[in-house]
Length: 384
Ligand SMILES: Cc1ncc(COP(=O)(O)O)c(C=O)c1O
Image: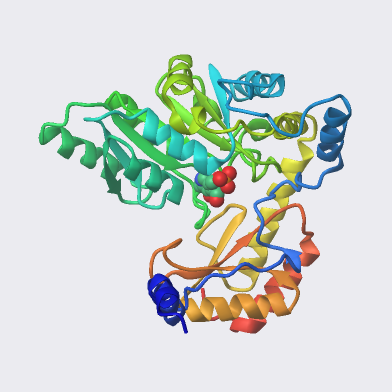
């Protein structure tokens, strides 16, 4: 054995072993079974119209890669066309397209809040928001989940201690692991009262909620203290994220946002796909309705089985608690032909390991009924 090699890897081996001992070791596995795991809520990822839009663009000469940063060669007419259309569709002053939702959140939070500002994060916001807050210039506080009173107190206490900068409240509209919805009306009022910005990650609401899938922030879009992140890899069936912002903040990001400037622009084909998805939302509203019907059906079927989901949305958490039991249940469901995955800490709080059941138009009511029957056979209805 080579002792040098051993020295180089022992720390990693020990860390992996510790995860294994805690039933938290992750691994990649292929897709298999009926889809109760993806975020492809409207089944747009494989929709013929999406494929055709890409094929037509390719035939018309759209390049596969952008070839550079948006500030150099990479700024394609497809990006500009998407941003103009997205601003119109969402009712915002401007929009800026990023390669992913993770990047958009990180980029925004490391660019706009300045030294001396305060970021107030809901405790359950996505990892990309925590990372952006940690890497940025402003100090940040975590407040109680979905509790505008906690946001208010956090801001007041900070001001009382001499905080004089701007406040940025950061939340999701539909929470990714719990499927519950933020009290946006109250949060807007809190932001207004404190002359703060409200940043809303609509990753799991865009395409699903609001008129034509404009999201839960649709009634407030265009306000000068609102910034919204509409990710494009979930209900929009593509990849990337559209950030809707007042013009001055878009201009600031184009000039100062390092994750926007120092990276190759997203493929123009992806911009074409996202723009097609926005068109589909407007021209095929039945998709949104069919998903709403499936969600209502599933919650009714849960109630019939004596179980109540903490959410009312397309994200149905089935809380198990223990890490190993959650993974064993996921694996039993997979053996029965359902693609359902377990989610463990740190993605969710300790002691709340769960199955994150996701409802999409890739499944039918019969699939849902069969999945719930299997789940209740496996658990004898004991978990919730
Ligand atoms: C709430 C939330 N924000 C952001 C992201 C990241 O988006 P993307 O997958 O486009 O990087 C996710 C994805 O898991 C999410 O759930």
